[in-house]
Amino acid sequence: MSLEQLRYQAMVVSSSERFMQEISSLLRQRNFHTDHVTNAGEARRNLTEKRYDFVIVNAPLKDEFGSRLCIDVTEHTGTLAVIFASSDVYEDIMQRTVTHGVFVVRKPSSQQTITQAVSLLISAREMLRTVQKKAGKAEDKLREIRIVNKAKWFLIDNEDMSESDAHQYIEKQAMNAGITKRQAAQTVIDRYLK
Image 1 (cartoon, rainbow, N blue to C red):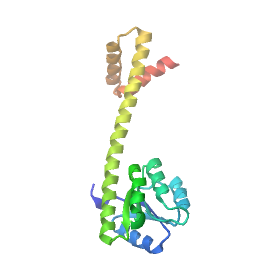
Image 2 (tube, helix red, strand yellow):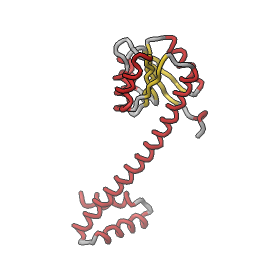
Image 3 (cartoon, rainbow, N blue to C red):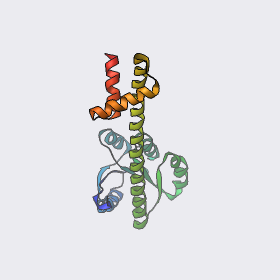
Image 4 (cartoon, helix red, strand yellow):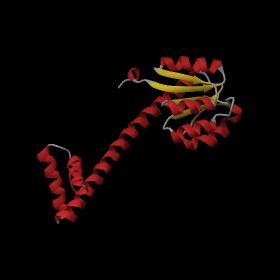
């Protein structure tokens, strides 16, 4: 899939209207849909109602600095967060947030720096998406193994089969019925749980 086909949802959190306009203009060029809020409280409310790929914070905010918001976002939502922090607090913010997966950008920032930061965020998002897909497939496979094992134990206990025989029985039932091993195993489980 090309970058032109990808659409991203971003929330920009900033007390500065100028920052909001500049970052939103840049994001629109990169196929982003953006929501804008002016404080952390509004941002947290939005996060309960909508899923975002990115949260971009221009610190400090009206109701808090913004680093806690970024940490909460990365730890609890699977959303990537970036915080723009002034040079005088940059190192401190970096120390507090980087281990939580928060991206920190020093401001004032040039257009080129912001563009590079957005490119890095997109790369990180796509890598995270790939990891999430792989994790989902692995979790599905583990669920299938658990169900098949449970069915095998029912067959071992109730039909006096060996583990190998139970496994072959489930495979044969799946093949004969044209269903997956998981479905065949679930049929066995359902039969004994009635």
